[in-house]
Length: 158
Image 1: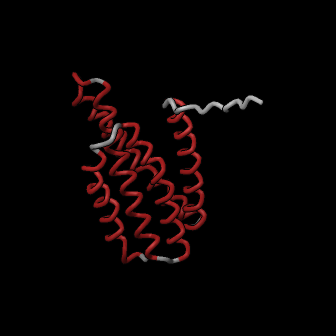
Image 2: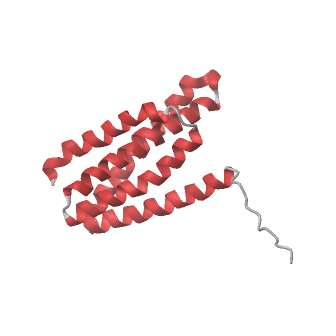
């Protein structure tokens, strides 16, 4: 499926760019929540398609990962850090971009090295499991910070 890598990269970046006008309408927390749910779904589709050779799953996975990473996640975090210190916005955004490029680049390098050492299938499955664990942890922290409505049990009087 190496011949499809160009389209995969286009889908990742293109769907991310297409989601930006939608993401602008959401709060930082909502952007991150959407991203937390989309990322594992997209990477699971990408992993499944890569292992079993189903191109539609690979392409859908790339599009969903693009929406999560470059659309909602990127915009949400960029908006969030720019609100941290509005008087120093250029410095804050510069620091964010440095960490952002490390965050997008290092996993690719680690996944590539792991693929060479342990095989592509094992590396993709391990990375998917790692992604699920990290996103689960982030969601727990995220929802602890968000006050959710609590439902009280109704007492029935006899």
